[in-house]
Amino acid sequence: MTEQAQAEDRSTLAELLQGHPPMARELPGFATDRLPANPAELFGAWLTGAFAAGVLDPQVVTLSTVDTDGCPDARVLVLRGIDVPGAGWVFAADADSPKGRQLAVRPKAAITVYWPLLGRQIRVRGLVETASPEESALDFLDRSPWSRAAALVGHQSEPLTSLEVYENAAREARRRLEADSKTITPGHTVYTLRASEVEFWQGDATRRHVRVHYSRNEVGATSGAWARTLLWP
Ligand SMILES: Cc1cc2nc3c(=O)[nH]c(=O)nc-3n(C[C@H](O)[C@H](O)[C@H](O)COP(=O)(O)O)c2cc1C
Image 1 (cartoon, rainbow, N blue to C red):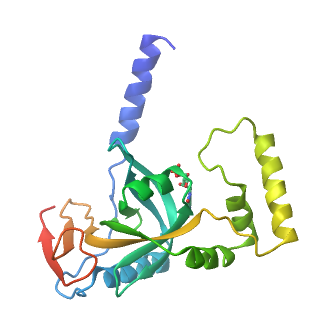
Image 2 (cartoon, helix red, strand yellow; image 1 turned 45 degrees about the vertical axis):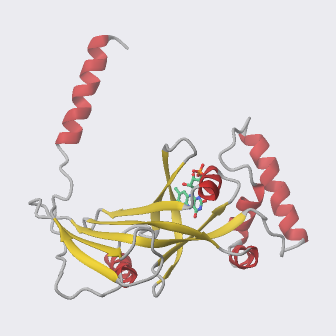
């Protein structure tokens, strides 16, 4: 590509980005005078509202972890549950995946969601607890055959030499499941992000965003009363 073509490409992309301001639509309000004491309860209400409003896959969230060099890493995954009394965000992953290994060394994480249709962002930070092998096995057996077969293949995030190699491994995983439907992937692990901080962010087309921050009394606390404050946008 010539330098001129590269410059044209850059300016077309800049026009594309600048021509699409985010949240330029009518968005819901955020009544901050009637908030629950527990942020997980508010998360549940917002999640229920997101499904009702037709947000696509509102249960898919970004999980951020940190590697051994202190470098952040992030990927999306599916929320498996919310422990409202304990303010826990539950998800499942393979302990042998990069995120699983990062959590084994540094059991701290953040979860972020953004629901464009509603202009809502939620940020959660805290310590991550690992469920017992028995609990994780039960979660695994509760999954669809497709999901179990996919997990059984293993090697997540390792380099793959060809799609054919993957197809063969997937066929073998399906065969193992057919032979014994109780087969489990030992690495399958349920994790709970026990929140110590949660922020609810309601966007506004005119940039009068409303933010509410919850925190527990102590940094990294996994129990105790929640304090709540508004934040400057
Ligand atoms: C919609 C969607 C849902 C996903 N759900 C999960 C999930 O629940 N658990 C999981 O481990 N990976 C899930 N993934 C894959 C992850 O984004 C990621 O590619 C994979 O876990 C490897 O991440 P890692 O290399 O950081 O460990 C999902 C991806 C997408 C696009």
